[in-house]
Image (cartoon, rainbow, N blue to C red; front, side, top):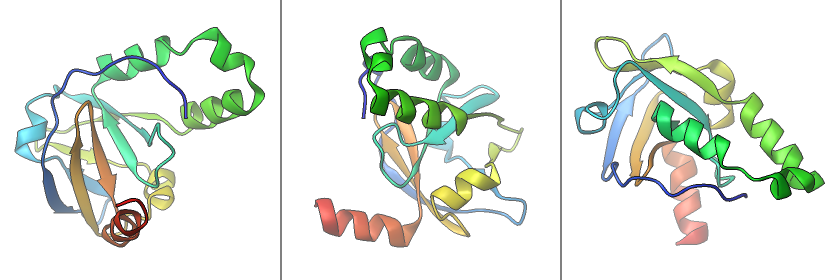
Length: 139
């Protein structure tokens, strides 16, 4: 969709987790060690039908490096506004759970089972059926 900074490589691997009745997701321990008590959750910056979980410093770094030329393009500006409007700072509780906002859960079709994928600089959250279709389409 748009470009920004490079990421430090931190997140690798794939896990299956479940949302609890309050819409909370427990981060895998392998990923949790990189977070303190907060994260940002947003729609994928690439336009994929999943959510991205960001370390705060990476989220702010990404957002601050979006250049003025990108804001000048009408379509890109609309995409950036939509992306920013749907990004939320979330607390990570002592058990490593993130309360995912309902609108983001709806966007990514997250109901119960969630695939938690390392995506180098972010963690991606996928609905299993959506991931299966995505893999079939893009390989």
